Amino acid sequence: MNAMSTSAAIRNAAVPLERDADFTALLDQIGDARLVLLGEATHGTREFYRIRSAISKHLIADKGFDAIAVEADWPDALQASRFMQGETVAATAHESAAHAALRGFQRFPQWMWRNTEIVELALWMREHNLETQSAADRCGFFGLDLYSLRSSMDAVVRYLDQVDPDAAQRARQRYGCFDHMADDPQRYGYAANFGMRPDCEKQVVQQLVELCSETARHTLSAPAATDDELFYAQQNARVARNAEAYYRTMFHGRNASWNLRDTHMADTLDALFHYLGDRNKRPARIVVWAHNSHVGDARATEMGDEGQLNLGQLVRERHADAPCFMLGFTTHEGTVTAASDWDAPAERKTVRASLPDSIERVLHDTGIGNFLLPLRTHPELAEPLGRRLERAIGVLYLPESERLSHYFEAEVARQFDALIHCDHTHALHPLDKSPHWTHAQIPETYPTGI
Image 1 (cartoon, rainbow, N blue to C red):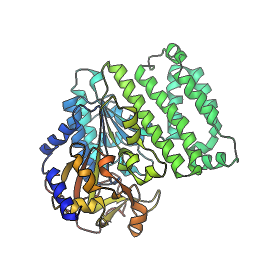
Image 2 (cartoon, rainbow, N blue to C red):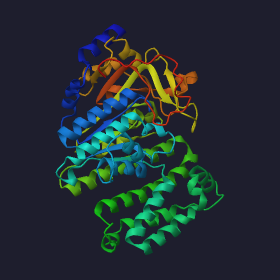
Image 3 (cartoon, one colour):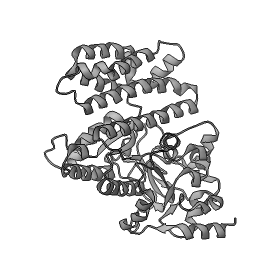
Image 4 (tube, rainbow, N blue to C red):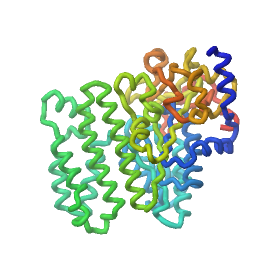
């Protein structure tokens, strides 16, 4: 199919987005889905955060969603969730209190969750939750990732200190296996993988087994041993177990560590889904925020061809009986908050115009601007969209090696249930701006309506 015919097919199915009310079409597409996965083409685009926030608010307020689960570490997100659910006392509900609630997000890249859009969402969530009649109806904010080895182990010990000091001592002894290397888990992984020191796999597994045993429910009878707090501690123990394996697996090749991480995210989502369903005595509903590369079904991508799986694929495979919906995002050009190297300062960088014949360029060439493209309900789009290059900008943006660093092949009609294309996008505003971030390379004007 030629470019003109492809553009015509897209324009026929597209729903222009000019104001918030236009999300009605997307909500109709989502329907009764109980797991709604919202992607992003970069980790630093303001429009993606704003649109995901608007969609999430509709799902929470109108459809009773129970949680937002994000590509972040469990203990950091839990600190924010306590503020959002009204559990922590705040002298004020203004921005300073929300800033404090997000203080746990100190690991690079801080701007992903310490930014102005998350502050606004946190304040909205707190107000919404405090107006609910029942604590069970409050919406939480939870992390799916596994990088928090030290802080998750510390959280397990702090919990056990309150409910069972003997169990806390056993946990200290087991986690003591890491010694000082828990603060540098990559170094631990290297040393354990290459036989320079014993690994701690047995110890983290033992701790998880003990904390998840029936004995724990019967013996942890202190006031702090609520079902929620026990579940939070169990999840921290799972993070410690899987983080230990992840840091060892990093040296086995990219596919092994990627698959372990996304399997952990899927397992965490499943645990949260079932826990909330059992606790609230009704089917749980969760909205997920993660990068397109995690949300879109890997089986429709070049990475899947090479042996990688991901969260979106596992959700579709595991929840065939629980309707799910996966939304991807694309952009043609603009600015983005990203770094030039790992642990380097956040910068506001210019996003180059998308490559010819990429999905982003095809969507740009329609001339529509910002629009929703329903893929599930328009199967006729599969052929004209075909398999094309798709851009993925993570925490690093390397425009000098754009094709090699940021593009892969994918069939978006199989990868997602719908796409939102924002033609010109703008950098996310970090709470902790470095001098590098303020040096914008192009003027920033916010587009009308989004």
